[in-house]
Length: 142
Image (cartoon, rainbow, N blue to C red):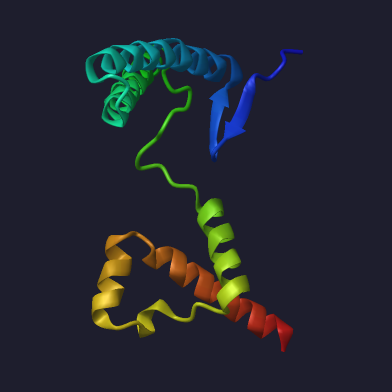
């Protein structure tokens, strides 16, 4: 069976080899650039704190360059599909919201402006389905 190399970092799923490669690229570019800049600005300014500050800025710019290189080398692995919805996810989210805040109620009782926004966001049908589900629960409980 193939061993999974995917790990979760800061809420995102990444390939552990690519993460390690990106870290090495970042350190391999940014650290030497910073050290050379610190030495160079130290020579120009006689070791003044301002020279170290400029070296830090150069090092940060090198970090950005390393990030761009890593992004080009290690493309995202996920596929983002726009326009496809799965009602199960929305239903689970609405159940979680109701668990925390209580029943959402009838969407038709919302103010007109809010109702229009709900419809524009494509949530109206989900709210109606959730309301009907709550009514059925109440009807079967009594």
